Length: 176
Length: 248
Image (tube, rainbow over all chains, first blue to last red; front, side):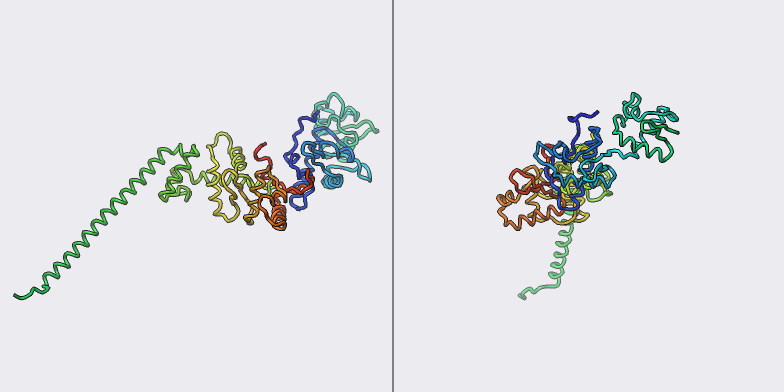
């Protein structure tokens, strides 16, 4: 599990104008791209799967206290909408206050999980969803403590390609 | 007594004298020329011998290399002039600078998204050392300058602005005029940032002129605009000049 202290901020985080949306199109593109990867890296590092806009505005992610620069709400929304287009976030409400953050997309998670199933010989057996993300066999896996809803999305992708079948709402059977 | 007129024999004698003088003069000139070319040859061979003897030193020691180059320049020899001739074959210096040139171009291009095509020469040098690795021969800032000067042949792509260690290398086409350079110079002194007021107080330009220059640099992607400043003024930041001193 990551800790707050050792996250490596990109150089832009200390660059004051990074927090002011740039008017020059090229520069703005570089800026929003850098913000997109920063948001994903930050959530990845802290194993966070959800972002609440009102909460995050005051978090270190969007507020650099040391240089006293912050991103405003409209700016955050703009960057999130770019991430949405890239398929890296999904709004949970129409008002766009909370979103899921996919630093890996459900498709990528499904690949990782299925690889693990093959490696640990869990094919043709039934597992509970809980034991996949919180069981003793997966404690060293990237998807350990993965968000339930994202896990469900990943399993559904496997089901659609015939690699797994959901058993009720709690279990899943993997095939080969 | 009959006054002696100019006799035929006297004329032939004079003519003969003139021819002799001329011959003698030619002879002297030939001797001098011989001596001179002989001297040059000796000098040339000595220089070659020197170069051969100090080949390793010239390759390895950037300061020595610089002095050797200066020495060559004073007698009109350019060891970098071509990749073929004697000098580059003997020393490999021609290739050396071509190699540096290629590496410098690579660095400039890869950092362009970050700095908009301007980079401090000290940073460029540091990055060059990093890409070349520990075991490559030592390279000085002067070598960087020499390699860059060779790149100038390719057009206006690579230009050096300013002087000394504060020099900035511009790797994007398009001219930067004196005003732009003046702004960069100013920004370099304060961690990569300038404001209208800074420019006005140092250069005493009209507001329109300041605005014009700052807008141009922003348009070129070299400057970023910062509106969240403590004094509510707009600041212009140059990624290329930001944090150069306290390197990361």
